[in-house]
Image 1 (cartoon, one colour):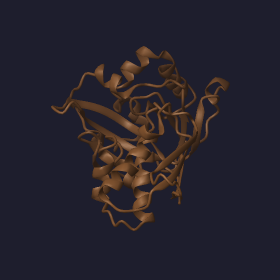
Image 2 (spheres, one colour):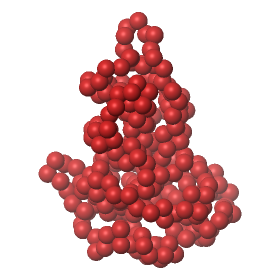
Image 3 (cartoon, one colour):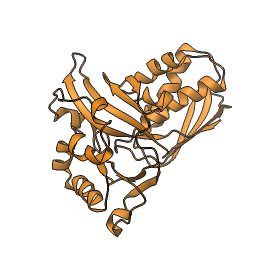
Image 4 (cartoon, one colour):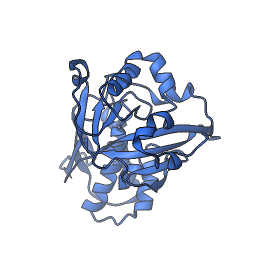
Length: 272
């Protein structure tokens, strides 16, 4: 079976409080983007009778046993009966760019194995298992535009507010450690919920919708802030860093003309 784990961007991100379990409560809008990895699995013929993972494409820097895909399959084996697998992951979504590639891979293998072997696992149970691998993993079970709260696992669908707009997604090639980014944040309840803010015309979002990670990221890596400013100079209606960074996106009414410097950083573009 071959599946294609998608990516996401965040339409705003508020870090609202520190939790007793060490995590943070957030409010964000997860929005799916058709920028994908590729994931294939077949029944393993390995005589050692265990799962086997290979990867190509972008180097994640992790051993196969530490990959979220491998961990997710291992967790499934603990609860359900199905054959050992030979898995191949081709990475296209950059690591450490705030686009959820690893989380999407994890959720996608859970869904695919469930379907491929008729395990009849409910979506709620899949989301609970996905949450064990990462706070934004549950979003990728349904991959619908959603407001995420709690750690990001409490999901409420929202309208396709970007439908027919043109997305430019840029990767500055800077990996940002999410745990480190959280250490430098200052949790606070926002004055208005994102559910109230996204109903405003998109042209007003620039003054209304923020990402609390940007202050830290822009101070540490000036290039990220420069990219955002240049997207606005190119005519973006709205631009923001995604997640804890370092990917930056711009929303346009139609395909823009970018400078040669920006064009080199584009990893995905298209109508939403």
